[in-house]
Length: 202
Image 1 (cartoon, rainbow, N blue to C red):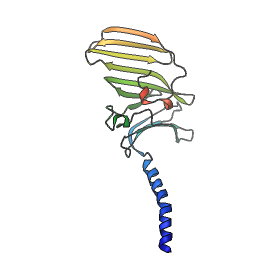
Image 2: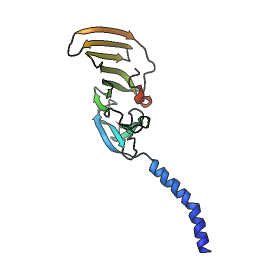
Image 3: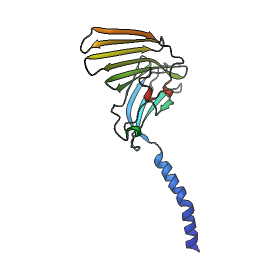
Image 4: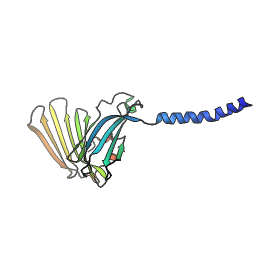
């Protein structure tokens, strides 16, 4: 009788134990800090913190952006947490192959958050300002090389809506072509909605 009861208990509790173990295993563990930047983002005179953490358990190596803002009591409060803004190092879409790009760098300059990323044949910089409780995208600067002898620098000011493209010969400061256009985007894109696939959208 005791053996029978033990068998029933084993059958009842084993599936739950397995499910629990699977859930624990599937939880993301962003334990490895790969970027750490400090500066004043909310203009209160206190240091805020920006972290990028990697989940080293997950084979795709996803990345988490965290923005902590200083509070009147001197402590830091997590304001933004996003796993969408940076592409995983070995994304499923690429069948586990390296995505080809380094992890973006983050800087705090002039009270704004700067994200500098690699793109194909160049780099792109996004600038966000903290206003009305949100980090809004206000500038996008992109530099690309055509693989031959031409570089193109694009500067888009989302506040004014003005985008300027300047094309030059490689190694020369002489402008080959310059264009200017106006594109108004309202409301301004917010960092919590920003996806890595949006890098070249604006």
